[in-house]
Image 1 (cartoon, rainbow, N blue to C red):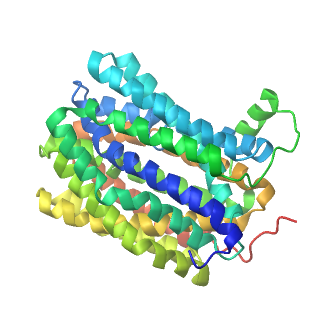
Image 2: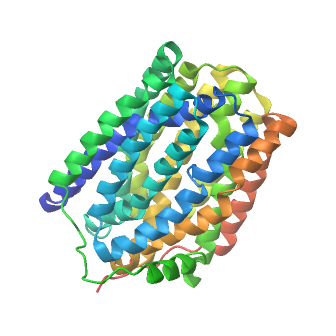
Image 3: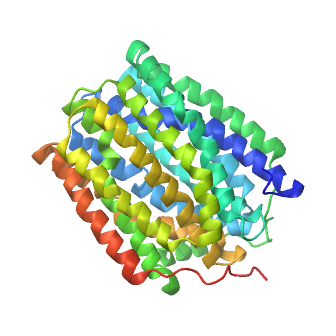
Length: 404
């Protein structure tokens, strides 16, 4: 962490440590949740509907983020980071109950709780941006990603092995334990970067902010549209990959874990150099490059069936993630002031989620209609549209907006 001052290191160390612990269980959850749901006798279209409700870009996740961002700008960042840990741990407990009882309503409730933990995303991203000097955002966001990715090099393979031999339910208690540790570390060591401003939080104001977040800021319309299109495209195809591979080609959970480990390794190796590149060279070109990597990735998914080829393709996916995630975060951090940063992150996630939340459901129906190649072809078309939006409507932020 030689790029950061002593004062900056305090929060960065805590945020990186919690990202590491959360990454250990998230990387396993991302591999097993789709096979877990399918193991309860659910169709692919219903799996897609569940993902549209409470997945990465589901409607619950979509609503939670702008509300969390708007509130974090008024109440501070730390309370929302603490709340997320509690909600995630409770969700894992409900997954255990659902697996043991086969009660569907408990499973759905668990996913809704897990998705609601997204309320912390704007607060956490803002805290990262506020814990470093101007000009270090790309490096700081990349460091957070690396911390979260590194456990994914090993954890998904081990988690897949555990799930194959002892059942999916055996994995979730580990997630509970890790998230409780995260909560304790945040509570004890994380330093607030934006204290409560004394404003009385009224639900009427929150609802007004939620409605406002449905439309992008005028200066960022092209960027918001590109991010939303990216989420929609990838949600239709690649977002359901593990479920489709287990159902179409009978890939084991351990094989899916190996794929995730390869992706995490590629992501971790590439992330820090990419972060430094973003800091020195800008973001727009990297966004275009990142989206373009998806073209050969989709062609592989459409035409191939062997595990070894899908495993090797995870290198491309790791590179896609390493270039897209910190670049979008840095682009937005440089485009707005600190006073509205968390709220704008929330607005981005709201707009993106409103566009993308039906994608997984549509992808599941495409799969039921034409097996795995059809949703992947739809994913490919979406990638081409996003590249066009980036080229035509997105411009590099000229300077970082002052917080003064």
